[in-house]
Image (cartoon, rainbow, N blue to C red; front, top):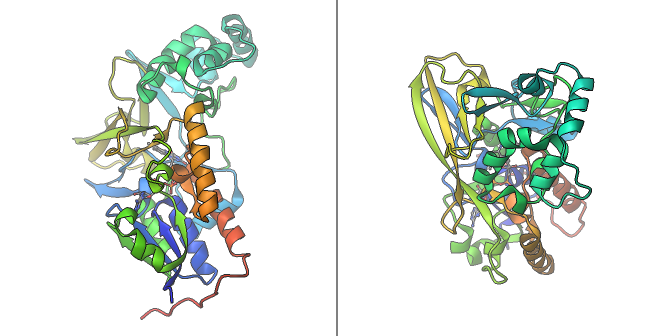
Length: 378
Ligand code: FAD
């Protein structure tokens, strides 16, 4: 008899949320991750008394009450709301582009003045085919130069004219003084850190977590001991790259421990092409800490070979078509896919939580799975 109803490959947001819901539905779950820690890319750890987001700054935000209520069972969020800042040359700009940014650049003060000026500078384009055409049609050359060209080229290793507009469309352009990065109703950072939130979520008698376990090294044994597999790793890797490799961008992070306050805010984006990193995160500002020491992280975009951590899917037409072939293959094999690597899509955390809750809803309406009572703690 198989010991588990589900094997969940990957202990990131998708894997942890699904595992919790499965356990609460009376299923027995084994969660593995090849990393030595839980929480996937949301992982945070203490360095010099500061909670550091190891895989890049993570700010939780959602408009979905169900997602918010679900996570609030496992943590309390502080009320951190992100306000972006951009450094270009010696100047600091308000970001995302809003009326304050336009006031800094052009000295204008009202939405009507902003609309008049933007109307004047926009480069008309009926059907923008790429990121450059799209952003020029929204804000014109000057704002494109300061905020988009250098940053995007560094981030993606490609000219903005070779990238799809979808990459940048999620960043708002506002003609008000609202400079919140996210406009969602619920926002914050878990008090005590993301890892603590994940530990609480996974703390259930029906969940076994095994770390430092690579699925591909033990696939036979792992699959033989579970009724179904939920896979959140790279989909092309699962199928042995048989149709070819999906492309990603990677990142390199460099931490430094310093005294005092380095930049007075959590994140500053460096948008000039000549500066090799894209942003500096000063983690203590996520928790409104005024400690003597501070930890900053410089974030360098990088090419992504097989050995590197894949962060951002490069979802152009060729990669999207390749992904569809893998997805069809997964459908035929009965494999359950979830999260950003298996569905080859950039998602923010709340979207991954929603995706996992939806899969759980679907799964636990199934009649053909055995229902086990939760095991009692020893
Ligand atoms: P992951 O967290 O990547 O988890 C997948 C796990 O699977 C990994 O731990 C991996 O080790 C494991 N795995 C893969 N292959 C195997 C294998 N063969 N065997 C065993 N285990 C395996 N979202 C926000 O909402 N707000 C933000 O501010 C934000 N900032 C971000 C900043 C950066 C730099 C990045 C890259 C992302 C950011 N995100 C943010 C997005 C957020 O990180 C993702 O939405 C979320 O982490 C996705 O969870 P996941 O479970 O899909 O993937």
